[in-house]
Length: 117
Image (cartoon, rainbow, N blue to C red; front, side, top):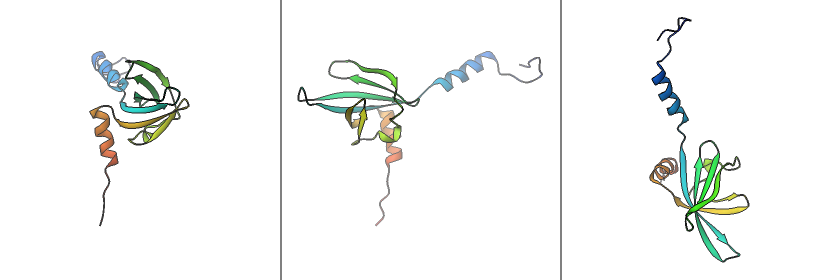
């Protein structure tokens, strides 16, 4: 479509699909463990990291949200890998495994190493 200013503008349906594509954010999921010394239990959580620096934590045993999605700028994607321990609001969570195939495939690409003899 040509606007009154004479420039080309995409139709409304193309605009909305572009806006929807831009609003899609990536999310990475990880299984984590936290040792509760008071109850002498190891609790398992699912940590979801969104690319806008927000996180959400889900308690797998009780099947409920442990921490609602909130901004947490102290954590970055480079801190999240299997075997690392991250501190979130004074809790030390050990990342034990990737939570889904998307996260696993993304991190498998970046963690490939070469060994030379």
